[in-house]
Amino acid sequence: MVGANPKFQTIDRAAWTARSIVLRHVLRRPWPWVAMAALLVPLSFVLAQRGKAPDAGTLAANTDGAKLHAGKSKSQASVDRFEDRFPQLQFADRFPSASESLPQIQRQVALMPEARAVRTEPVRVAALTPALTLPRPEREELTTLVSMKSSAFPYFGTNPNSEEPFLNITKGERKGHKNYSGRVYWQDETYNDSRVLVHVPEAFDVKKPGVIVVFFHGNGATLERDVRDRQLVPQQISDSGANAVLLAPQMAVNAADSSAGKFWQPGGLKRFIDESAGHLARLYGDPKSAQAFANMPIVIVGYSGGFLPTAWSLEVGGLSGRVRGVVLLDAVYGEFDKFASWIEKNRTGFFVSSYTRHTKRHDLELMQMLRDRGIAVSESMDGSLRPGSVVFVQTPDGVTHRDYVTQAWTEHPVKEVLVKMAATPALTRIASAPYVGR
Image (cartoon, rainbow, N blue to C red; front, side, top):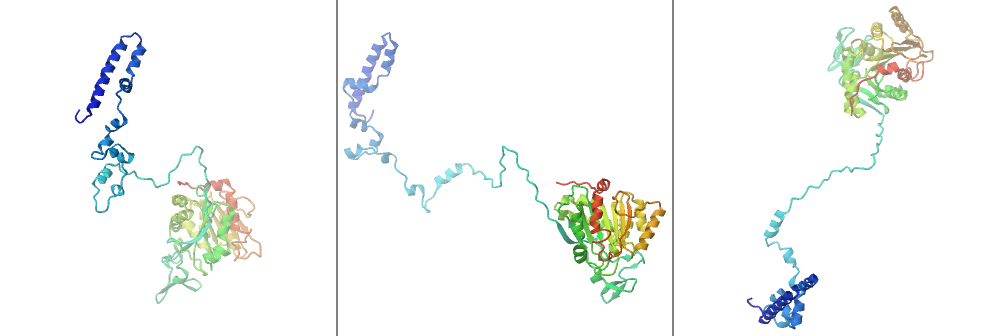
C-alpha cells in the first residue's frame, strides 16, 4: 500500500498468520461451540497476545481528520475536533448578497413540487350527532305603496257609459275630466297616481290556501290617509287571521268621482293581478311564489264609490271565475245587472252587501232581481258563509257612511267577512292555489 507504515504492515501480516493457525486447530475438535467462539475472537485479542498492538498515536495518524492537517505540526495534527470535521455555515453561505447569483438555489426551487392551493371557503365538518334544524326567522309585516302600470290611472281611454274620451276637457296643455254634475278634475292632479297599497301580513304563508283581497276605496280618499290609517284595511286583514294579502289601487285622488279608469277595459282586472304577482312575490321574499299569486283566488271589497270598478271588474275584468267573494259596503248605487249576472253565474262564491238607509232602496231592488231569478237571499250575517251564500244586511241608524269600513253591522266588517270565510272548510278549499317553491 503506497504511503502506509511498514511497521503496521508487519503487524498486520503476523496477526492474520496466527489467527489462521488457531482456526485450523479448533476446527478439528468435536465441540461446535468451540468453533463458534474461535470465529468471534477479535483481532485486537490476537494482536495483544503477540504484544504488537499499535498505540493511540499510531491509530490517530491513520484517520481522515489527520490527513486534513497535512503540513501542520505534530501536536496540531494529532487533534481532530468536531468543528474541524463539521464546520458551521457562514451567513454568506446561506444568504448570498444581492450581487451574487443564485443558480443552485434556483435549480432546487425548480425541483420542488408545486405549492398546493389552500381552501379559504368554509368547510362543513361532519358531525356525529344530527344537525339542529333551526326555525326560520319570522317575516315582518309589510305595508307599502307600489307603482303599477296596470293600476286604474292614468287613463287615456274612453268612458264606456258615453263612448266619449274620458279626458273630455282641455285648458291650454292641461287635460281633465268633466263629470255629470259639471265638476272638472284635472288629469295631473286627480288621475295621475298609479300607486297601489300592498299589504302582506307577517303570518301569511304562500304554501297554504290563500286569497288576494282587492279593495276599491270610495270618493274623496287617498291610500295612506284613508285606506291605511283611517279605515285600517291592512290591519283588518292581519287581525282576521285569514291567509290573505291586500291590493288597493288608488282611484281618483281625493275627489267626488267613482271613475274606474283601466278597470273599465276588458281584461283590466286580469292585467292588474298578473302584474301584482311579481310585486307580491318580491315583498313576500320568494320570487318563486309569483306563480302562486298569479293563480290565487280573489275577494273584491268595494266601498261607496268603489262599486263602479267592482262591477266592471266582474263584468269584463277577465277573472270572474277566480273571484270567490264580493263584499259591498254601503256601495249599491247602480250597475245592478252586472252584480246579478255574476251572482247567477258563480254559485261557488259568496256575495255580501251591507247598507245604510241611504242605499236601502238600491239593495232592495237588487234583492228582488235575484229572487226573481230563483236565487235565495239571506238578510242576516249571523250565520256562516258558504259557497253560494248571498247576504244583504241593513245596519241601524247612527252608523255613518264615512265610518262604514270600520263600523257597519259589526266593528271592522272586512275582518269579520274574512274570519267567516276562513272558518268554512269549503270556502277555504276554494281559496287555494298551487305553489312550486323552494
